[in-house]
Image (cartoon, rainbow, N blue to C red; front, side):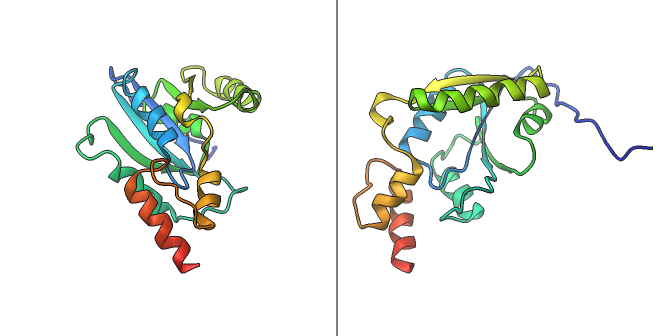
Amino acid sequence: MSDYEPFVAVETDEKIAVYPGTFDPITMGHLDIINRSLNLFDRVIIVIATNSSKKPLFSVEERLMMIRACFPGNEGRIEVDTVDNLLVDYAYTKGAKAIIRGLRAVSDFDYEFQLALMNRRIERDVETVFLMTGFRWIFISSSIIKDVARHGGDVSGLVPDHVCEKLREKYLQI
């Protein structure tokens, strides 16, 4: 007898999407993608994914708190969670029809395209939806934000105010 248990999808009429990232920290570019996703889907699950190649500045708990603080009153349409297994399996079990991926530049597309094809091979019922980051935010990334903040630069307006404060606190401790 095998220990393998197949994933079981949640049955729902709701249009659900999963938006993964490390969100270390969440930026205005992320919020742009999330808010635009809410125009397409009934509910968006923001998922903090584990990336073994990255050493995050903020703990998972801090990132969960910062993300939740961005969406007061949207508890019915926004969910925040973590995942440490295959994202496409997670999406399927949550009843999601799509994985949202933000693109800033053509250079992002090659990797994202390969990932989308692999996810499609694993689970045909989960689509990948690419959204271009708004032009206003196309130049920012969490890495750039952290680098500027680490060196005392002003990142206000590029991240939510509460995130800006957390960055200041974090870099005062280091």
